[in-house]
Image (cartoon, rainbow, N blue to C red):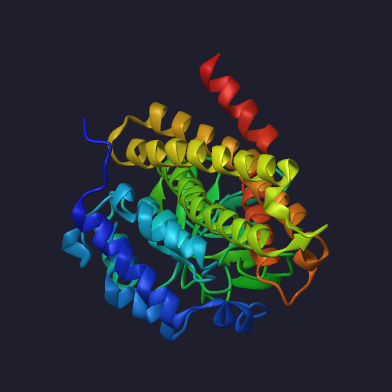
Length: 353
């Protein structure tokens, strides 16, 4: 068994790193922080690199690759807090659509997702009391909230219980409302459906579960990169910031914080990469267990990485002018995405026990 990334996988990550460093630096992130969506020239450039079509089957214009191949590029997006809809569209939506037995649904949406001209999002009924119903003709009625990149979406993958339906987001029966959140690098929306026509993807819950797991894993992989960068910034600051005539990095308390951050990142990397492998190669039960384990760990320990970083930076870390708070907010969002750490741990306990 080989636990190393291949040379091609590492070269792709390097290409994405160079591209985002040049085209999507922190200044870019700040410029679109309050925008409803980040589908622009930077997004189209990532599509040209091939990121948006990596998981799409070759017959629909994609590369037919797996989430392991996308793991390092997703980490690079976390390192730059890139605000585009890669996890929602290139991962979650693709996995859902590729579970459809209807070639017509796949042919309508997957080629566009592969070349970046179409954006998808998952509108899964959540646990906060929102309801969605699908009639016998596939029409969707109801409401759901906290849809990642819902404002950017051309196609929405809607869940009503175990039924999964693909809905044209531009249909008159779909109303999308931006949701203001603490993290402008993640765009959310609330969506109301009023008899919007849709195409049924799956009725047994398998497609919904696979898509939800894949999206959750993609967010964890992004979080690995964000946490790494938060640690790098913290170490650099601890070396230059002086107190009592010494760099604060010489103080044991700061060293302990950095050590705890490194431990969390390395453990999170292991569980995240394993979950990516499980998404590609394991059976549905193991995939869900691995995804839940990764999400539980990231929701708890990656948030602590961000909190430790703020402790090291002190007051300046809370200001808009400094970049570290962008990473704090990114990892804070991860800690709450799809449920808290306690929610994921309860799910994991139900699986194991």
